[in-house]
Image (tube, rainbow, N blue to C red; front, side, top):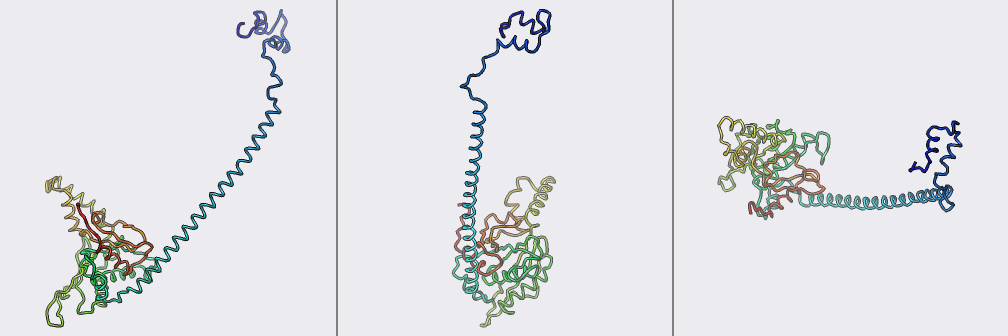
Length: 347
């Protein structure tokens, strides 16, 4: 047997487990193969005891490594907490300073419910928005500056309407996601009218119109459109339009308009090439509102909360960091920023 070195006689005895007719014992089988086995390992090769000692040393080294890892993790944790603490203190201090400064500016620059004071604040501005829009929140539970719920929302609307009328802004759109005030046009009209009378007096009070998309407008028909001055001349009374918007007037209106135009195109009432951005813009202006020149957010972050997207293509958006709640200083700062803005449409 060439591969193992056994002779033919040894191979036959090993396979048949017998030699010369006698069965082989286990010792005799080992004797047949012993001469053909490799030599035993020398003393220079590692003994099991040496191998075990090396493994023990390796285990000791491995046991020491986690201590270094724990120290490193602890150092990283301390550094992270230190940086987080520094930034937390910085942001809290900055927020407290801004709130303090807003309060100081609010006290020093209070309008005192006087239109002349507001006119004096905006008289040096190069331009004023013709259409002003604001985003308000309706919270039934949260209290903000002493007011909450529908009454607080209505008070904010009345103040913004009075500020806008005093500054000479003819159109104000109030966006509130749920549209809570849409169902009370008469009550809203009366509340805004009373606030305007406290600012302007009963004889110089601007005329008022309350509007909402897909709903009839509300105004008092007996309101005179002109007034008599002290020298006997007749002057036109300023007019203020307050438009209420909600989330339903945004994307849902775009979807309804798309479906309507599709049906009209299928029936042949309108050609496909006539459906373009100008047509969509005209329809949305008629059914929702025109594009506001300035949008004021009385919140610390820029969150539009579902505001109609088509109307915000060229709108200037303003907010003050860390501010929360409707106040006159945010309104005035927004008008000042808009007065310095440059509009380069298509340039």
